[in-house]
Length: 362
Length: 127
Image 1 (cartoon, rainbow over the protein chains, first blue to last red):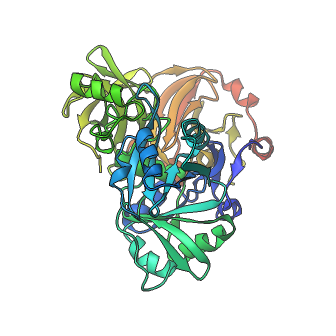
Image 2: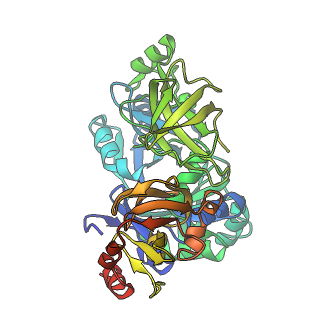
């Protein structure tokens, strides 16, 4: 394994659980323990825990009221000004042409501090981009990624598990909210989010406490789950993956993330391009495609045809463990992106019939 | 890791079992199925196709990836394991038995001598 790869504080736990380790976003992370399908099923029907220590955390602090919020609102697509302390929102960091640098969640931790959770592969890029745009006074930006270990506890049993992890009378924050929970092992940050489409929470703790909290998750009945299941779970819910479905070449509107874009805000980086796109109409859109017949798994890079015309390329794809059929995402040129459009996915030189379907798949 | 003594192996992790009248059965090894992880799709050659040794003849796909399967020997495809279309995981559960992939009528039976025996294959995957 590449010696340049970073290791999670939970590395030895993964090895002792028999995980298959793979390089991912500069980290050596578990892709699966027993199998992607059983791990996927555990999260959909019970409880799973993912090591997400590779994800980045950035802390934005304002010395004056509104300073941090106003600055974030000049960089991010969503409206940070609407956040009350303890609330979070999904948001997108854009380049000057409106293309996606990263998708992230921003939480307002208290009156002045904002806690951003960003993709592992983009942590440095986000930090450098934001730092270059810091105002000279009033706002500070700190990369706290090395401070925290993190795990995502996901599945319908996550509320019950939280009582075992914390205390019987502890209350999880509401969906998309965060709380700092005092525990016998010190404070932990708990966010009621995840990327699986199931109820659950993400737990951020000091690196030295990683093993303690991981073991508590396992003791609470969570099945350890790897990147493989994380990918099938998010794909079934049509959550885009940066680097696959999100890229600097596409705007969040094309990616179907309009719900996280507030064009009524004062200016933000990329806004003019999005406003123009919105008024002109989208030339392409990231759509959900379902294979109609028995077909090999659709995979990223496969071409999508409408008749003899190539109208897109898959950015994510695979077999849905829940549906048992091939599902994928692709940017499809207009007018072929409407729901119900018949398309073909080309797999090893053969065309397999598919259809644009409503998001999410599951 | 199961490596039956009565089979021949290719460096690309296929196994060959000699049946009768120059007919051989071909599948992938226990090691290969474990490396691939749970299979969700198997694409097999058409019966009647003439294949050459080392030619890509089948594809096995897990949730994460697709892998080409090479024919270890030359011949005509005389039968494929149709049970795999409904249950590709048979390859994982029973790689040397119910999870076989296809059968060939050998056109160059001497090619069998060029394959690895169980001990050599074991040494190869232990590297």
